[in-house]
Image (cartoon, rainbow, N blue to C red; front, side):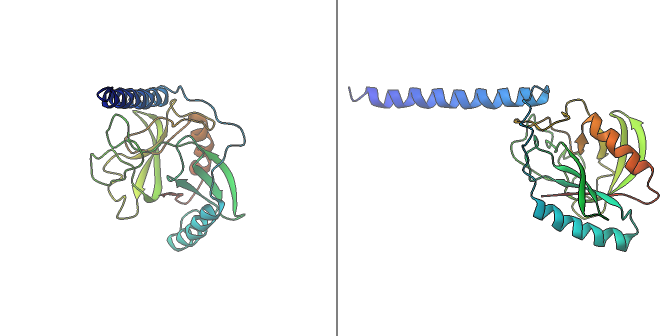
Length: 213
């Protein structure tokens, strides 16, 4: 009878590992193919105090650098990818104009668990830091904006072809599950890009985009 106890534990452990592996696989497949579940309408994990702090710092930056002082784009990579974490912020009125989903980089892994950041050419990771939104163009991912990294943490963004663009795998509303991942580009939903376009294209000064954690 004693010999059966270790065997029982082994069977339970194997079953548990198998379940966890299957759950992780299902989660990845759902996100990659857009099979995520919409979150309740009231779902919001926005840290208002943190957002306000970054907006205050952004105000000072755009004033000193001669950027657009009406608005900026703030991305809180510390939030789950299924939550709104791309914020269009009104710097004049100190208010949130709009928010939406945005991807983070998978560092060229099939699926990146958690977060990993990098600036090396070919790393496929998200680079934190401030960006100047450059000229629009139409390329592999459709309509997109060049991004110029302004910090040591994202100085290779232009060379890495990290751009702001949309993709159909990014939902228009918050999700319970994680959404798809990119190779380093802050990728938004088609609807979110349509909201961004007139704001950037009508601006006679560079618009700041800031990714932080």
